[in-house]
Image (cartoon, rainbow, N blue to C red; front, side, top):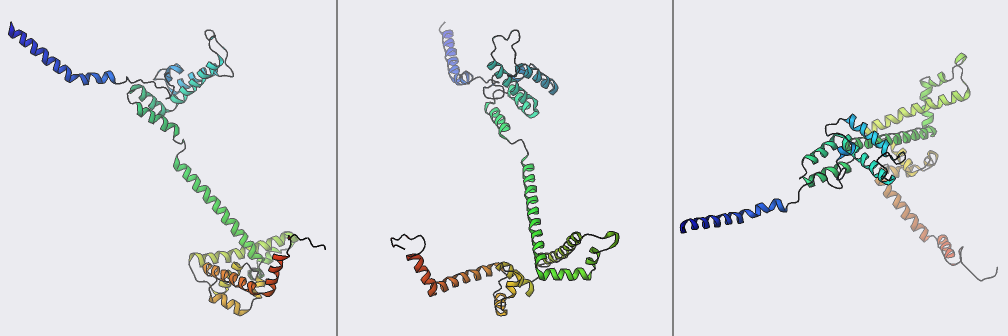
Length: 324
């Protein structure tokens, strides 16, 4: 009898040891929180979106849309009227029901969102993954970023084109007022017989205003050809400026009219050319030197000193008690 009792004791001890070793594994499912498919804050919350609309999971888009329209008409806050069996439902609860119906429809009408929702129902244990997919779809822009970039680039290009075109027309209009270019353009127009066509008589006789406008357009077109040739030769081909072109750029930088620039002495123009003032950097240095030189002249000019002294001691705005 002793042996069997020992075997039973040994078997009981081994069983207890196995139970102790397996106990952590048995406690894991007990300690783990059971996964729930419907989570507050996601989609329809703790309500099933299919049940909210009264459709099955295999319902088509048309069936979902039909169920949504019926429930939206029923629970719309502006049209809600209690039906038999809804006496306990207040307008506020009807509004909440309408929002829930709208949320369910927004969830199920989109194929991608519906796939995420069905996956959440089938895999409730992937808790954080559902949160990620839900908020990534809600916060991601609806419009493709590539389309936004393309539209932005096109808009900037159109704006730059019209800005360039406006500057181009202003430059042509200005050149048409410069006597030198206007006379040259008029001579070219006469040589090509373009001005005679503008003054045709007979049935095609035009008024003075029409003739003047047409002649102006002819002159501008000739100047445009010259301007395009300038862009092609100097900006595209990189051809070096001639003396005439260099003086023209210098005059434009100095903001002087043609008559003012022509009134300058020849040695001044030669100085401009020697210092290569048609280059922007060289002109900025020259301009700064001229300003510094003017300041020195004014500082050493006795009349300027007297004027500054008068402005300091007796200039306008000074209070005195001397009777006039």
